[in-house]
Length: 123
Image (cartoon, rainbow, N blue to C red):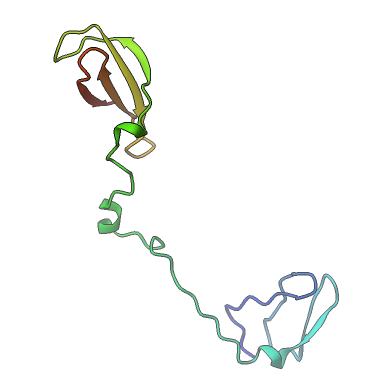
C-alpha cells in the first residue's frame, strides 16, 4: 500500500490514522477501530492550488482594494476647522479609509461644508 501524502481519518473518532509502512490494517490509536489496509490501496490524492498560493510579481501588482466610492457609501464624517481650497470656507468634514497596504497610512477624504468641494490626502 502506498499512502504517502494521503490523509486517512478514522470514521469513528476523526483521529488521523498512521498509513506509513506496509501494514495489513490501519489501527486508530484513540478509539482502537481497525480498517483493512487494502481498502485504501487505490487511494488517489488530488490537490489543487488556490489562485493566490504562489504569488507572482504580476499578481501582486493587481489591486484587491476597492478604490471607487459612491456618495451614499460615505458617512459625513467629523467636522474640523480646515480652510477649503476652493471657496475659503473655514469648516470641512472628513473621514478616513485604509486604501493602501496596512503598513501605510490611511487616505483622508475632505468635503467642504460650504460648497461641497472634495479632495483627499494620503497620510
